Length: 151
Image 1 (tube, rainbow, N blue to C red):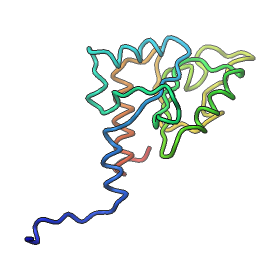
Image 2 (image 1 turned 90 degrees about the horizontal axis):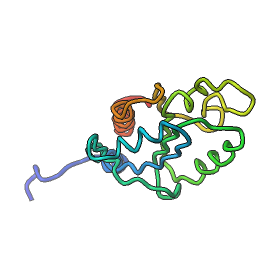
Image 3 (image 1 turned 60 degrees about the horizontal axis):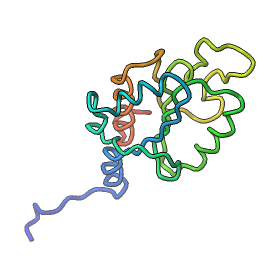
């Protein structure tokens, strides 16, 4: 074999390259932001261009948790358990004002941001955010997976 037929790299770099375009999102939608997510996975916006087409509804099969909507104190243990059931590596996106900071629900039963319960990698503001903002979050996660950008 000629010396030019070899590629040297680390196993972790190869795995991250493969992970970049094979994110398996799990939507945790509780409000209107989940409706925007449905638009993002439709043919008009085509989330498959970003390698996140295969939406999973089992935490054991997902590596990207998309939390969309208001989270109450009753739902907090459920969200935490779903996060704990996900395999490593995993990433979390707080999608919309309610998931990021409680939105306009400043009352006794609403969590003021899901980062009180689970770690969040990307915050997407808006009420509701546009699908393009979700794609921007996915691209940031992909850059973070490759180590080009801090998540």
